[in-house]
Length: 170
Image 1 (cartoon, helix red, strand yellow):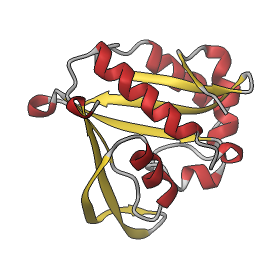
Image 2 (tube, one colour):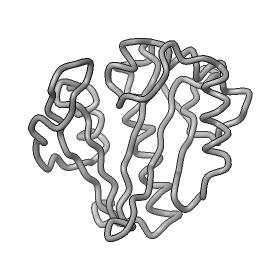
Image 3 (tube, one colour):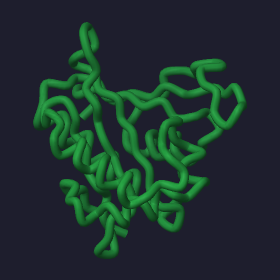
Image 4 (cartoon, one colour):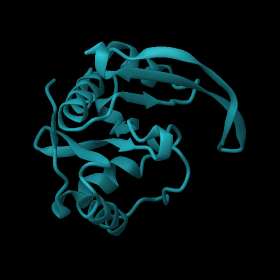
């Protein structure tokens, strides 16, 4: 199945709310997102993305089947890490396991490397999220190590894994 990355539009807020209101999706994301996630929360997020610096934040909706099915972004870091960016993403549960996220990760990395001076993109999935780790591996990321007891998610101390892709890996 093919996916496209597209700029966010306010009309995407309802689809976004439907995707991220799933507890299974939120269990693989960082804390701070409201649950349930409302259409208004989606509009607030989309407004923040649309008003952000396009050289600092590369954030897109993932679309398939004529609707938004997920979100993906590359976020430039600061100070000595200003040529490094963190990758974050999620997709609706009904689209898990179809190769869509791997394709989206490849697309956004190519875009960020082509449109900026970023030299390194990294991701830190929870170690228990084997599917996300596999997405990164299939998209050409290199496993760098395990960050032991690096987070507390849903009341449990958990490891995270560090993956990266360099501009020179392209």
